[in-house]
Image (cartoon, rainbow, N blue to C red; front, side, top):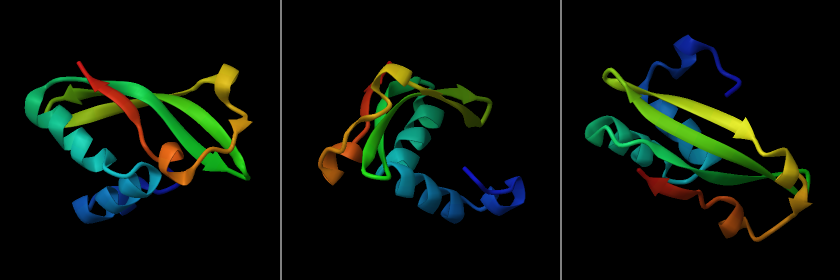
Length: 94
């Protein structure tokens, strides 16, 4: 995320940063912690007029969660799509 651990310690700062990446992501991660149900799905992000595709997995870990983000190389330089589509995670709570 490009920040030091100490900079991410505050919930407000973490919420702001995560929601800049993907709107609503912080609330989805809170749901993972509260319910114990994992979160997984594709995430599309814009970079230099190209869309990049990642696969995000979040699981409950104690009273927090662990997030893994993998680059999906086969889809990583797809044409730029609408901002709304790029910022909407395609997720399923399992």
